[in-house]
Image 1 (cartoon, rainbow, N blue to C red):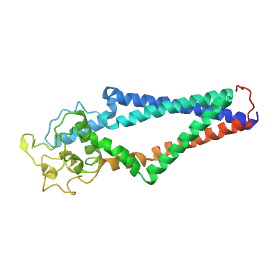
Image 2 (cartoon, helix red, strand yellow):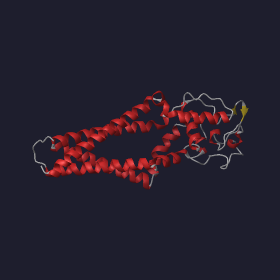
Image 3 (cartoon, helix red, strand yellow):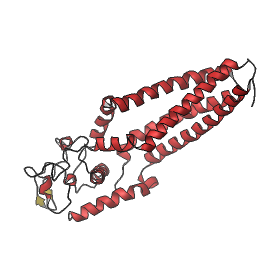
Image 4 (tube, rainbow, N blue to C red):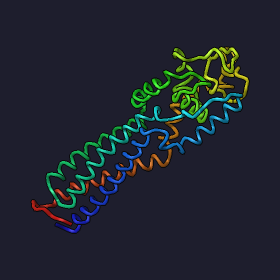
Length: 277
């Protein structure tokens, strides 16, 4: 086996070890998210503190101890676990095939990794070129999490999560205030014992005060309310356009391309015997 093939084996094994470590990290993060707020409570402090400040400025005393973002990001957790398992299995194949130059394992590795690589390229192209297909898959789930939304005085986990998110990001609903119409527990008829006629959740007001007219029918406008600003687009832009996320995506695709290239190179230059580095 030539020098390039030996270098290729080393690169293939090292990169697959890195991918294996990454996959274990992804699985761990997914499990942590599913485990709930007791495990990652420190990550919620900023959201909870921000929400409590807004509630206090509106003269409200609401128990926010049930705040959890788990329900909103549960699909992400499951996706991380599944993707981590698949990536880890392929990384193990790559390590074994590279170390021992097992032809059948390398062939399976190239086919599986190549197929996943093509799927990832297509998904990334769709997300950044035309995200409508991605939107159609994610938005219905997010709207479902609004089913139990009960307003600014709600203490249920999903209500608190949405209030914290809308307050922190300056947005209202998934696509706008219309997402709240027809819900079972919203709108409330009173806040602090006083009658209200709400058009949008109070937390959607741009300025937080004891005057709730910014959220009521007839007085809520885009000037005093985030009523037309959806949280989905803000979160999408925040995550998908973040330089770190873009860099990680590019690096993962580049790593996979290099691994596929060297695996094919080894297959093309190897003999039928078993080698160990």
